[in-house]
Length: 209
Image (cartoon, one colour):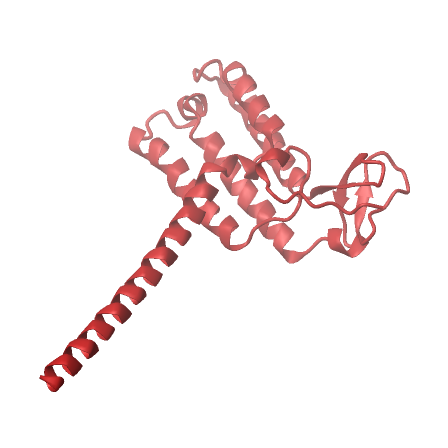
């Protein structure tokens, strides 16, 4: 009887360990899934709001609602290039607050941040705002995300490649958005530049000088 009780205790202990391991695995999986889905839902963080708004407004006008001639294609191509350049530029912008609560915007450089109003106001720790390799990686992700968004627009599709299957134009933004979101979860951006939705960030920390 003592042997039977001992065996039951060992079996119960093993079952508890297996349950704990499965719970840990499940919680880790849920954490990763929530992080990826959160990044996908907040894909608009990667793209400046003004750029997306301007593209949505002017794309039907420049493409003649998808019925293009050579002039429309040239104008739309130039506009897409301009919007793509703005997405890359806004990736390198950042901001900081002073003791008075005033918000300053600027461009990150290799020496720190250069403010737009040409003032000498600097954050307390200028090294926090220097350009880093990850900034160029984020700029590349922003460019890819915008090109996927612009390339799948119905008027752009009708203008440049009307014979493209509908499945491709519907699937491409989802795939690109998922991949870009995963990369931004793994390599998050700490910059709060122009077009960044401040209210979506829980810990908006600024250098107060």
